[in-house]
Amino acid sequence: MLNDPRSHGLWQATAPQPPATASLDGEVFADVVVVGGGYTGMSCALHLAEAGRRVVLLESREIGFGGAGRNVGLINAGLWLMPDDMIATLGPVHGERLLRLLGDGPALVMDIIDRHRIDCELERNGTLHCAVGPAGLKEIKEREAQWQRRGAPVRVLDAEQTKARLGTPAYSGALLDERAGTLQPLAYARGLALACLRAGVTIHTSSPVVAADRKADGWTVRTAGGAVDAEWVVVATDAYGTGPWRSTRAEQVHLPYFNLATQPLGADLLRTILPGHEGAWDTRTVLSSFRLDRSGRLVFGSVGALRNTGTAIHKAWARRALARLYPRLRDIAFDHEWYGQIGMTTDALPRFHKFGRNVVGFCGYNGRGISPGTVFGRELALLILGEQSEAQLPLPSSDLVEIPFIRAREAWYEIGAQIAHLSLARL
Ligand SMILES: Cc1cc2nc3c(=O)[nH]c(=O)nc-3n(C[C@H](O)[C@H](O)[C@H](O)COP(=O)(O)OP(=O)(O)OC[C@H]3O[C@@H](n4cnc5c(N)ncnc54)[C@H](O)[C@@H]3O)c2cc1C
Image 1 (cartoon, rainbow, N blue to C red):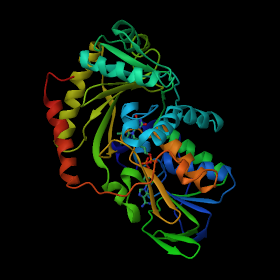
Image 2 (cartoon, rainbow, N blue to C red):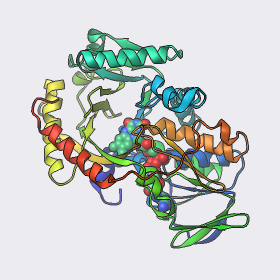
Image 3 (tube, rainbow, N blue to C red):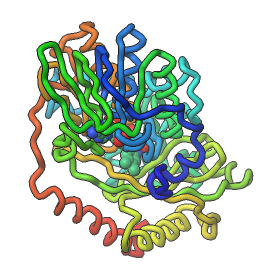
Image 4 (cartoon, rainbow, N blue to C red):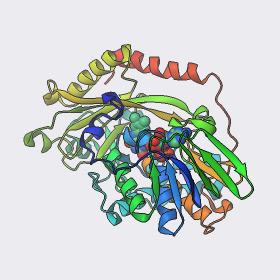
């Protein structure tokens, strides 16, 4: 994308072409202007257009340019936080509501994919949160207990069952979440864009919003080439945000995360390595994730940026780690590599913001944005449609609080990941 092979890697190479869109030129009118062409913005735009609203969506670069086109493609149910910790932080009303909505999030994603026939390599076989040693096993058992108390279809697999699913004996167990799955993230984003267009949304790409002016009956949102007059503005720019609401970027520390994709594995290997096509990641702090794509490539990732000294360090680590997980992949070639920035908030919870009268947005998904972005987009649409009040949203409105010394923290994450991956003992 945009001639950078390390920005969207495999997903750019294998996603269906994006629908044709042009930049904004001149002044147009809408009921709602949505800023940002990722999952949050497009889910919101789609739900609004399906309810008959005139929607213009402005994307600064291309559809899926942000996290939506760079991620691992794990359609998770819930957040990194343990369910009980969400309740402790948010209180029972918002906490339980958020858990319920995000627990049902993968079902919403899969329903949209089915309804709009989005070709995005959807796999509905769940995810495996893999336990490293006794501490990892304790953690996933606690997660299992907390979700099972809420009736969720999750269960811990023992070491033998885990080995049969993964094709490696490296883990002491795994939490199987049957609500979850995997997809091709950029293909999902482009499919959402096509669904939006068919529902009547006007999409302008290469149209960064640079200013927003309040007027008597709404807002004028401006790009270099034009303006949109609308009653409502949805800010869906998240960790890649620029322009008038770039403070959402400043409340999220960028945590870099990279992926390497092998060449397609042969039929023999695919009989033992993730034969059920679950998405997997482990309980380490500097975690590893792995999943297959439709062609049988293993997508293997961890924390780190593929730039400067990081490129060689992380790729060397990935080769060692993959060989330890799957000795038969010791010499396999990596065909694609890419990385992106995950936006991390201070308490690992997303945020709902009111930036002004009728200017609203969600952001801060801490590496869990496929389901949450899709869910929060729909929730914003319901708010704008008057079908729910602000008090019924899954999160209370919060103030924007910029994280101090954010660049220093980001530099530490980037260097810390290199130090972690330089250690030969670490997987
Ligand atoms: C490497 C990586 C791995 C991840 N893995 C997973 C995973 O496996 N599962 C999961 O659920 N989540 C994962 N995530 C997180 C997930 O990708 C994000 O949470 C999700 O993309 C957020 O969706 P969004 O629509 O809110 O924002 P984005 O997808 O980032 O979209 C925001 C869009 O806004 C546009 N924009 C910004 N400023 C402006 C402006 N001024 N005017 C117009 N447009 C603007 C950007 O160009 C961008 O396209 C991962 C993220 C990364 C980076």
